[in-house]
Structure formats: structure tokens, C-alpha cells
Length: 117
Image 1 (cartoon, rainbow, N blue to C red):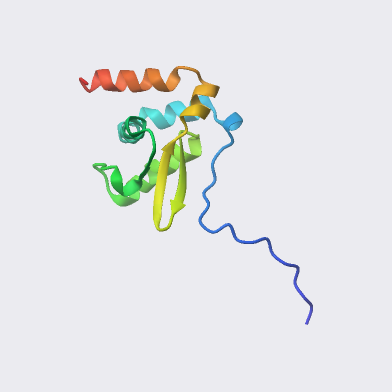
Image 2 (tube, helix red, strand yellow):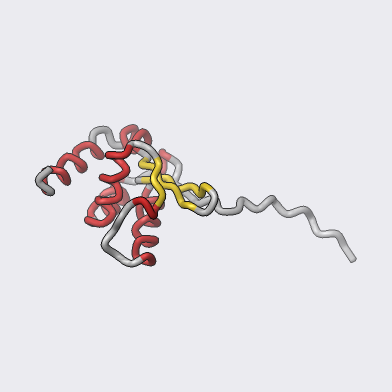
């Protein structure tokens, strides 16, 4: 029996995120164009910290929520990490402001204005 090379340790439940310099404007705008995803971003911006998926109420099914969070994560709008069994979400404000100064604030202000806030 031959010994197999040691495999790299499993990363467990780490999720892929684009590096800040790989965040693309088209992907961000696509992610923010959906009202459900914009609601997630607005909630995270207002909180300023991390929120579990279960703490953000959305008017869609659980599988559709998963899709929306994946689009936001893969576009670079938010960072998701597991804390125990909870998937925590945090807005990547610093990365977005560094790549596209003023974009996030403008989108959030327009969303608030449209909602009558």
C-alpha cells in the first residue's frame, strides 16, 4: 500500500469572496438593482456591524434568500462568515468605497428617498 500525500486541511465552511481589487462595477450594480438585495444592504448599512441571515427579514423563500445572499457575496457587496451555525453578513463598505467612492452612499440615499424615508 502506498502512502498518499497529505491533503491540504479542509477549510470547512469558509465561503469564497472576491478580493477588493477584483470587485467589478457591473457586478455591484447588478447586485444592488434587485429590491430584495437592496433591502439587505440597507439593513446592514443601518446596523453597521454583522447580522445573521435570520436577523434580516425578507419577503421570499429560504432558497431565494440563499440566492440573493450569494449574489451579494460573489459581487463583493458583502462578506459572509460562519459563526457556529449562523451565517453572518457584513457590508464591505470600506472595499466598495475604496473601489467606487460615493457609490454605496448614493445608492442607499436614493433607496431611502424612494422609500419615503
